[in-house]
Each structure stands twice: as C-alpha cells, then as structure tokens.
Image (cartoon, rainbow, N blue to C red; front, side, top):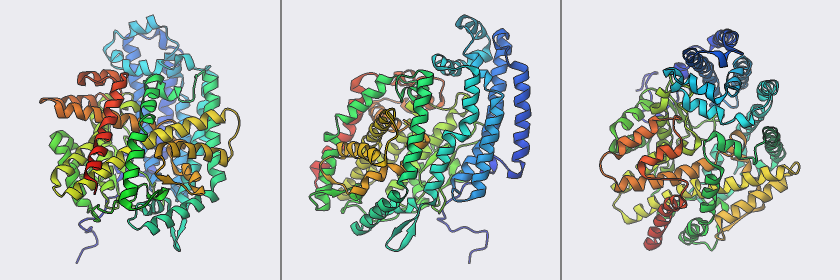
Length: 593
C-alpha cells in the first residue's frame, strides 16, 4: 500500500518552479526592488554613455545585464506558471500584472540601447579597450545592427509601453481562447491537445471523428482567430514601414543574424523538393494504408505494420539518456538533472499548453521543459528534442543573460541533433525488418513535419503578411492562402475537406513568434549535414559540437559551422541536408512492407 507521499513508479512529472521564485507572495516586493534599481540605473547613466570611460562603460553593461536578469526571473515564473493554468483567471491575472510591471520598469532602462546606437563607431571602438566592455561585443554588434531602423526616443518609448496592450495582449487572447476550446468527439468534450492526439489514433474512424470535431470547433471561433492574426500582421506592417524594413520577414532575419537570401535559398530548396520528398512518401503511405488517396486526418496516422505499444515514462527516460550518453557523457549528465530536479512538466491536463518547449528562463536558474507525454514513439522523440534545447541552454548559460540566447538559425540545432541521436540509437537496437521500417517511416514523417511542413507554414505566413498590406483579410481569404500552401506541399496523395481550410488557426507560432517556423527547417537540414560530418569524422567531433553549443549567441551561424567545413550560404548545403530525408524514403521504397 502506497503512502500519501509515494508516487507511482511511472508517474509523469510536474515541474517545481520554486527555483525561480520560492514564494509567489514576494513577487510585488521583488518587482518593487527592480523598479527602484531601474530608476537608479537611469539616473546614473542616462545621457552619459558616450562620455563614460571604457571601464565605466563595461560596468554599465554589466549593471544593465544584472537588472534585466532580475526582471526576467520574475517574468519567467509568471509565464511558466500560466502555461499549465491557461484556464485559470488568477494565473492569467498574475502573468498580465507582472508583464505590465516589467514593461513599466524596463521603460526606465530603454534609453540604454537607444543611446548605445547613437555612439559613433570610433568612440565605441575606444570603449572596447576595456576587458569587460570587450566581452559584450557580440551583444553590442547585435544591438547596433538595428541602428538604421531605430526611431526617435519618444516613439520607441511609446511603442515599448504600449506592447502590453498590443502584440502581447493579442497573444494572450489567442492562448486563452485555445485553452477554453472544447471539441465534441463522439459525445466527449475534449481539449485541443486531446483532440489533436486522437488524430494520430490507429482507428481511422476515430481520426475522422476528431478531425471533423476540430473543423467544427475551429470554424465556430474563426472570426476571433482571424481578427487576432489580422491585427498582429497589421501591427507588424506598421512597424516595418516605420522602421523601413523592406519585407515582413526582414526584422526577424536581422534578429537572427542571417541574410534574407540564405533564408530564401532554404525555402526554395525545400519547395523544389516537395515532389521528391512529401509527395513520394505520402504516395507510399496511401499504399500501406490501402487507400487510393489519404484524407488529411491520415497524415500522422500510425502505419499498419508499426508496433502498437505505449512506452512507459521510465523507459523513455532511460532510452533518451543512453542516446545522449553514447554521444558525450556531459550531455547525459546535464540531461539527467532535468529528471532529478523536477525541471520537466510532462503530465497532460486541461488548461495546459498543448505543445512542447524548453524555457531558458535566466542563466543563474536552469531551464524548464514542458511537454504532454502520452507514451508514443513521437513523444519519446519530443522528449529528446526538448532535452536538446535544455542541454544547449545549460551549456550557453555562462555567456550571461545578454549573450546566452542563440539566434534562431542555430536555436533548433541541439534539439534536432538530440532527436537524431535518439532515432539512431533506437534503430541500432532494432533487428526486426518490419519494425525497423516503421521506425524509419516515423522518422521520415517527423522530418517532413519539421522541414516540408514548416516551409509550407513559412509560405503561408509570408502570403498572409503580404496580402494584409492591401487590407484586412476575411477568414475565407486566409483559408485560401492556407489551402494553396498545404496542397502544394502535401501533393496529390491527399484529399481535403472544406473544413481543413481552418487548420491554420491552431499553429501558435503564427501569433506568438511571426516568421519563427523556418528555424525548424533550417535546424533539421543543418543537423542532417552536421550528422553526416559526425559519421565521417575522426575523434573530437563531440567536443567541437559542445563548443558550438557553449557559444550561445556570441558567434554567428557561419562562424560556428566553419570548424565543421559547412557553409549555409552554399546551395549544396541545403541539398545535402535534404538528401538525408530522400535517402530514408529510398530505403522505405525498397522495403515496401
């Protein structure tokens, strides 16, 4: 008999946020302290940066970093607390209150980066003679990259103060709308996450029922979703015009320290391979499922020859840790801390975010992972993926609050590489040909979702933002852009119901992080190329790879890839990454179960 304190052996973990804030009742006091320090910082440095000595300038950046981290710590707690309580008004109230207070506080420090961008190059060069100031050069370079797009101080301050009632408020409305959604599937009221999960059922009738319920529920809320997306796109358009960005994606690319043409080369390379990748694979899948055409709810359907078993949490933990340990013991050691320290929230429940992420919070506190574990192979791969993020964030933490974050060009590297390690480890242990084929097929589907689907998302998003410049879009117009992008990417093996035109609504990245989605395709192709180097390399690759992760945001993607002989500006780079997916499909065609 279990005692009250004993958990079942395979109980799914829920995170403990006390390392961020031990007592939430102290949050007002903590914010008050930050507010006082921000005013003191402003009084000490505003209008004086250009005349500071090199040593004083370095100290000013260090003071700014320390204060930013203190605010971020409280904000991180409120954000993560809310992610498991999206249907809880008190959690929403705490989050909004903290965000508003944080915005008010950071208004007093906003001058800092604005003034840095006004310092002449020659003057800044002299300031970098100080060791502390010189350490922050990568951050200074990233800040000053936006110099041509900086507005007047008054306008920047106004935009900053209004963010909590602008984009951030619309994202909150989207999140809370999704959390409240319930879908009637065969008489059962299900959350968005549970309904999407049913679309991966082995039972085709259940998949269909879930899809039709999803279509109905999304259509009932289509006006709200359309209003939110229209508003976010229009806000972005206004900001782009004011800041003189030449395209809607340009600001994101500048933030990611990647050239527009590199992103376009990636998108073009993937689109040109739609037929060879997605169209070819889904034709195979239709044959395996015994149908002439796949319905859209069959896209993630389990294959008939795939093993139908649930993987216990403890087994998933062991498998993923072994995969990381087989590559480098430091990676297994770091990953183990997430399990031992209650840094993972894996239990599905109502009101919880339906996705998965690893939140880096602040460098002096470890990252936190959120996912919804239901025991599928895909869930095991998600665990490996998010632990990759967590390992990356842990290794980069010593770079400090201002330079630990990795640009999106490399943000998915460690996560996708971790998935590849788990996949190869799983495949190596499996000797049954039918099971091996199923594992390979699942990996191909994951890659298609990561590369082809995300570039299709990118195409949709680009189309929406371009069309929005001409005026507000109706739900039907948005749906047309969605259907065109999906039909092109998925190909002739699919048939679509009219309600599929609303499925763009639940892709949270379109609202929360416009133009983020290409990072997944960038990361997958990059990792495929990187893994090919790993397979052909002599000893020392793993140590070089860890150095890449430790760099955080201190180096550009091109500098970090150079030691591996890779250049993302070379068209052959993308073809090399895509050829890995093509090769796996070749193998499946030969197997032909």
